[in-house]
Length: 509
Ligand SMILES: [Zn+2]
Image (cartoon, rainbow, N blue to C red):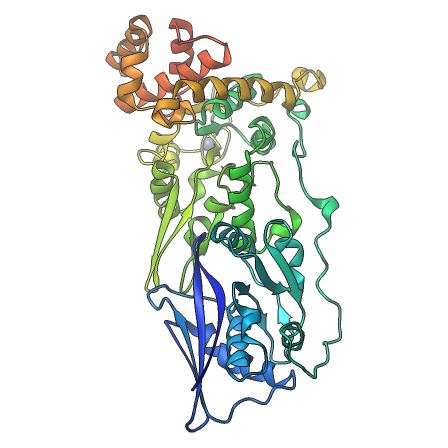
């Protein structure tokens, strides 16, 4: 019996693990099987791999060929192991030199005609290779730009199984398919800080801009309520520009998620916090992740380390809103399927926007509103409790009157706001160093009560007694007061910061 082996990498969520692919060519009737928990596309890999090898001039063994993918306990998905399966069979048959495959990862999908197709999720695979000290990786030619983002691992691009054979010391007869190749990523299109759209383009709305600044500085979730046309979307989309650039670890996380979604080419490794704005008709799977077999990432994971903007928040399905609870609490989402549970990171800043009522005009004196009172109450009832409880800042965004509109261009730039945000974040990080928290939104109620001055706490107690605040709301008001203190360069909040903190969250509770 002849044995050949190759190394591939599997992904569950963003977690990568090495897969040993072993081919056994033994006497017996012609038969080709793949074992080791293959899903549908892996079974189809049999047809693809056999045909692709034959299209490269390789004579497929007319005996028994068994390929085993281990560890068997790990679920495997997709077609990215095709090339490693082909390499192991070619090696077992003596068509390529076995020592060429040692310490080398082989990744790629193959077509029936032998051409090698790009795969999603190469970046987390490259990071895994670097971590494991694997020096060489063979990737589809169309993935080479992505592989080169991690220069510590030597990546070689191949376009055809025949090319792989020649690379490994074998001989092959093949023809590269005609037709246009996928365009390589245009490096000029890589987004870098600052992101497009500046806060100084937003007319008026000073209190809303201030609320966004506080949200960015303390990591607080935010809800804006106001009639249509007040610029809520414009404000929210400028949030990444005042949050400060991502650090290196966060950049790699965000890029790995994009790699998994197949959207990395348009971004590269970027320091801009992502911005995701799912539509209110989005399915739960589109929002939190899902799909057949092993679950794929959703909008909340694409928003990881950035902003998740939910416009017309009360219009989202209750089920979709309910599923946000876990990630808002823990910073990740767990999606269970028959093939196993997949974890995706989802530590995002939530910005929600809503009309004040179904018709949109319940503000000021409320005379333009045509809704019945019970419809107005019902409109927000979906959000109340589980979601609104977790939103620190709840503000109203009023219509911009024509006088303010004509006085355009008076606002501060995103860059100036960002400098204050970054300074405030630094102060919070230093204070919470021993606890491992990075911002005020993570501070526990116990810490807040032990460290906030008696004078400031007295205001919270009064708001509790008069039922202006709930018990949970009291903690959130205190967190806000700490952020307001950080933004003013104070070491702890006084009465004025606490008063403002209380007023920033009493809109809807
Ligand atoms: Zn109305």
